[in-house]
Amino acid sequence: MTAFSALRAIHLLSMALWFSIGFFWPGDVRRTLARGVPHVEALAERVERVLKTSLIAAFLTLGSGVGMIFQLGGMKALPTRMHAGIGLALLLLGIEILLVDPAASKLFRAIADGKLDDARAAAKKLPPLTGVTHLLKLAVFATMIVRI
Image (cartoon, rainbow, N blue to C red; front, side, top):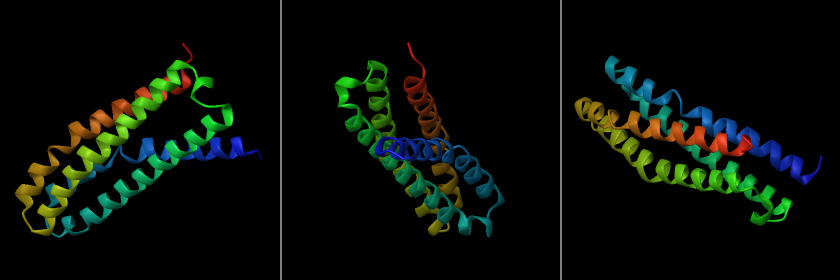
């Protein structure tokens, strides 16, 4: 197996994880908060695990992508659509770090303090944010595979 093949395998697997892991946790939050105590006690741990795994997968995706770029000869060797995809992926990562993680942290604090009404209010901010990340993931995917 060549270095490029190994990087591509890492890239595809980590990208699949990064793109798919975020689909269901906002619904899990909503359903768990609706059930109340004692179900909410494990919610923060579950969501934190998902967010950490997503972040690791994001960095593996971007890192392996950079490795493949160097293997191909640098950014000049890439088509414009991939430049756009890289930009969108960086924007996506920024949204996850700067907006989704802080919103989830507010949820975790409210749960830890036993304030379920505050937790429900914090949870209502998550679906629009994760919806934006899903759309960006679709756009990144499209720019990387669709030849224009």
